[in-house]
Amino acid sequence: MKLYEKAKILRSKNSGPFEVTLDILFENEQDYLDVKNGNKITEKVIARIYKLELKDIHHFVFFDQALGIKITIARKISSGSPGDRDVYGAQQHAPLMNIEV
Image 1: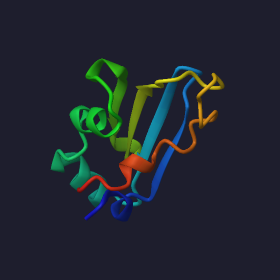
Image 2 (image 1 turned 45 degrees about the horizontal axis):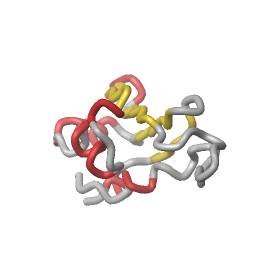
Image 3 (image 1 turned 90 degrees about the vertical axis):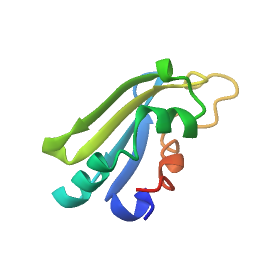
C-alpha cells in the first residue's frame, strides 16, 4: 500500500525561507500506528527521496496525540530566490505519496 492510500492528509509548507515542513496526518490511530511501527518512513527514507543528506533533515517527529508525522527539511534554494519553483513550499509533499507502507 502507498502512503497516499493510508494517510488522510499529506501537505507541505514553508517553515521560513530556508526550510519546508512536511505533514503526514492519519484519520485513525490504527493507520497511524501501522505506519509508525512499520519503520517505512525514516530519516534515511526521507533523505533518499528528497536527495538530501541526513544533516538536512532538521526535525523528524511522530506526534501520537495528533496521529501525525512532522518532518522539517532544508530547502535547496531559499524561498523566492532565482530558480525557486515553489515559493510557498506547497508542492513539496508529492515525493511522500508513493512511499510503500
